[in-house]
Length: 368
Image (cartoon, rainbow, N blue to C red; front, side):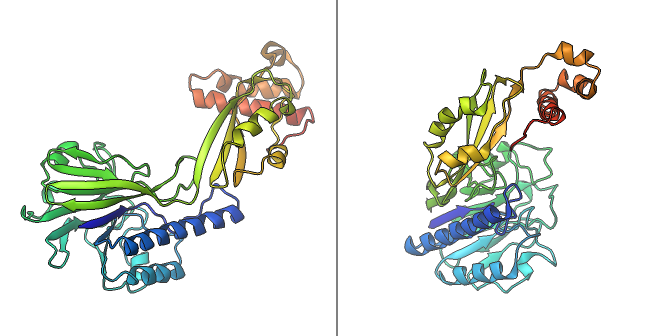
């Protein structure tokens, strides 16, 4: 049985971290990546195409996207597409799954309880369930129908593993080990994992097929390969056209952005058009240091998208500021408690606020 295991596709995702033009490019790339998987299924003669939840971002999905999706699935009639609605595309009256009529080779789980579908006379049974809202508690593998151990049994599951307080269908490693399934096709976690084994059961998270922000770095794809009774031969294949990446650069001691722009540009040059890159600046700098994204973009032709995140700390005379009687001193004293907080993130945010606030008070230019 040749399979493709994917999930967390989030078609029509809004990509809110990007400007509207870049966001539309990323939505197109996401649709293109899914189309590439359909083409792969056709050329590799896949028997099963498993979508383990979050095929859509249901608050944003359009009917045109659903119709296009159905047309592509129908173009591979010999492949069975099995879908488990997840927490971002739960099965309900107004869900994307009720916008259009899906082709005959598509099966969608609609019950919150585990049910099964037999794939023709192939000797393969696929089990799954559906979210009916954006959470799903009380899920347990013990409620699964009895399996026929002479057949290949695959469970599609959208949820967390070994996080039993999670509201997203948590299952334990012990449940996986005792389940009796040949393979558990996991979704929900966007970072793919290696193919693991507990007892006689193989399992893996496929990960998403396109990163949606800088929290999902690296090239993405799906799990493909063959499943036989007692033997699973699966591996990851890249389908993403682009990737998010983050590089860090220490600019300690720099009094101006021009002091370090050449070194930063050299780091950026290591990435090509297939990368959306964030440069994180760290270290302790003078008060006059001011990152300039436009200046960096003017000398770096690649990657395809570039942004700077200023994580630096300004070298300020805290004693003088604390005693200062002007607006600058008042501003410092308003932030002082947070600047020395035990919470590292609170200290970082307060330091950034102080740096940029003082620049505004002193009438200095502020660039993103």
